Length: 307
Image 1 (cartoon, rainbow, N blue to C red):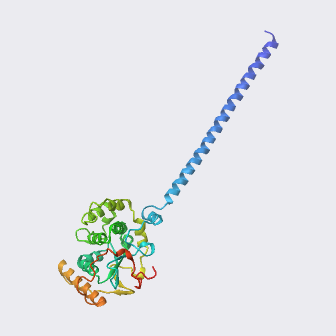
Image 2: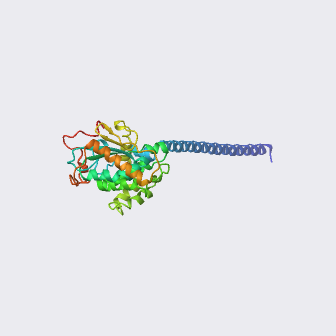
């Protein structure tokens, strides 16, 4: 082999090696570019995922979300945001306001001792009652039983004023009313168990569906926002117009539950007689709430004041 041919072979070999090296370098550059591009896409995906997660985390949930939901108001309500629950004979000349919180032990004590007397006065047409339901005990003691029970009361009111009154009485009863520190009414199952004692609600699928789905949660939050209306921040409270009605204190002494209830009932009747005059004969008006959705009677001062 001549030197010339040998040199040419070496040159060709070097060219092949160089070409192979360049091919490998191009391949490596492409691989790195793909890795970088994938990493960028991954970073963007992670960033997007984090952004979405942060957005979802900042979205209101539970009862905070209920504040933003579209309100569905129960039937038999009126007034601003449908938060006026006015029950009784439309012909009644007077309107009394009752402020309660479902978890309130003092409200339960009132309902257990004097609730039936209040219902009889409504039935007899002695006065109508506007109920304002608060939920401040949820904030004081923690939990959501007051709000959840109020939403369920909205579902009962949607059935009828009678169902609302009976269900409210059952929620406050000695049979069901829990210690205020025990948030039983936060459970829909507990609210439905109580409803089984109310004929209008027992087995009522529309009521059960509304309780389980929280149909009236937004309405309950709108009612909750009335806290402090007319300066009322404690329950139970009774008002006639702008006048707060006050019952005599029960003496601090040992007594049986029956004795306590009798004294409390006597004090309630005394307060009512003082404000509205002695009770007249029964039958002044036998409508226990069927006209409850007609609102403030023409010519009567709106007991809700400016709200």
